[in-house]
Image (cartoon, rainbow, N blue to C red; front, side, top):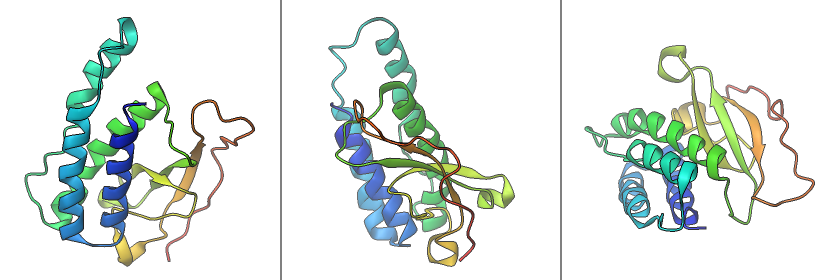
Length: 159
């Protein structure tokens, strides 16, 4: 449950990058750092604690360059870490999340991110190619019944 603030801060950062709003993205970046520090791990033991201790430093979002391009570049390893966190611990948010992918990010190397909903909201390109990408997996809240986790939902769009 203590990861909810982290997911919420990350999703705000993802949305601000998709909106090309550098000032709001900087504010959201600060919230991500605060949320990582606020995660309570004292109830974890064994493998879950070891996994959290491995993931925590990867969740440190410290872009060297706070331009929109720098924020986007630093967002990729943060996204990899947040997706690994969601795979390991799930989420308890009140909505479906999605693992999305843009094959054109970073010179066609491709990059994933976590987002709310299944309409592509590309943080790596913003308005230039907001809908470029596809939803690869739907991620329901932990314990949700009947939720689809189909990896092919979405489609690739360059608009």
